[in-house]
Amino acid sequence: MRVQHVRMRQARPLIPLTYTCYLGSSSSSGYMWVMRSKLVAAVCAIWCCISSSSWAEEPKDRFVEIPQEDQTTIFDLSTVQLLQPGRFTILGTSIAHPDVMEYQLKVLQAIEPYCSRTDGKYPPTPQMLAMGPPDVAVDDVRVSESKGSKLLLWKYPYAKLRNAYAVLSCTEPNSYMRQRGMITNGYRARELFDCKRGVWGLFVNENADLSEVVTHVLQDGTFGAYKYELVCYAVTNEFPYRPKRSDK
Image (tube, rainbow, N blue to C red; front, top):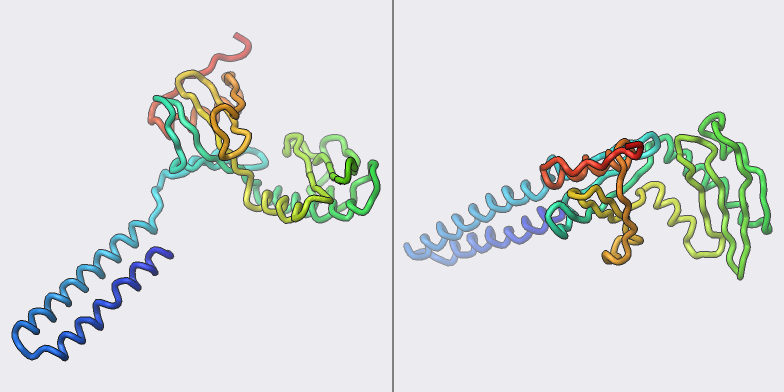
């Protein structure tokens, strides 16, 4: 919408220009200038409307969404960088489902006061069990102090969160807001797909080069292989090489 605003502002000076020409011209040549200016203004206005509406519309198939029990991973096809035929990198964002996001925010709020405690283990508060009866063992909150830094660590006691942890630095500036932003905005990462060899990789950070990607040979029947097949087909419009099952 910002583009549309800028374009329309650029087209406005044409209208007062026409009005000025009309007042200052009584001859036929002046009249022609008026008509020509009006034509230019009309063409520009139409072009702005058409181009603005086309910019505002996103391609229908721009995103590949892969839901899981606790989160959805969304791959943005506009970020694809081709490396070789069938081999590319792409940005993906994993963001929690609404109920999980609400729970993780409650835990983050509940765990912050533990920063006032000394090194050791402490029981969690009832707020940290707000997603229902735990279905795995409930661990204590770990407060770790070392060389002037303090870190809080607690494992979520629910199987659907797949061994995820609540983590908070007590000494790093803005750690609370960063963790909150990671929960509400999702975790973004660049991934590598080699659709001709059944290989997937994860970059250590979004801007890392290929020497800093950790790669894996996928196995059929795993979530990684499922994700690989969906993303590869969306990017290449071809069925990728299918990894073999680990039991064969």
